[in-house]
Length: 133
Image (cartoon, rainbow, N blue to C red; front, side):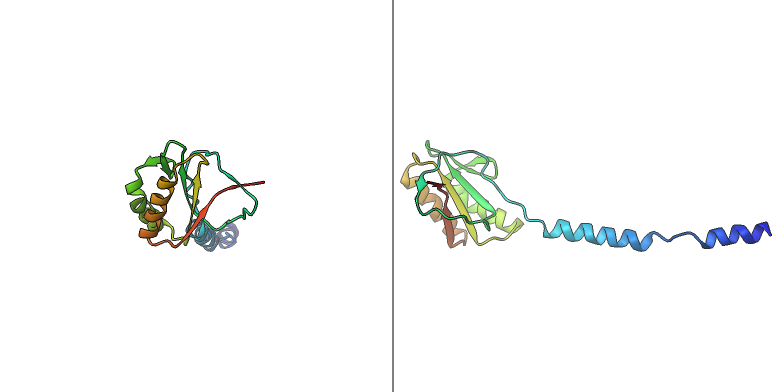
């Protein structure tokens, strides 16, 4: 009699394997589909614009300070290395738009050089960040 009761308790155990499989599959799905934004890492004094619009789909941000420093992915880079850094970021997460956050006191030549590097990296859509009025 005691043997029969022990065997019934063993048969009544819940198998957790399928639930754990589903949890791990969901975890992998959420990790793979997560979008990571590569921010520039500094704050700049952006110029004001009457017609400024929001562009929420950008994943790569490049900041240009008033003194000409270029920042990507929370570190300062040379203007000549912007294209290589963009290609590295595109390998991690493809995107079709880059946002340039240039200080309103930044030299026009530096902004144009950065835009050239972005075009050489294969991105045609470049957006310039501005403050709303």
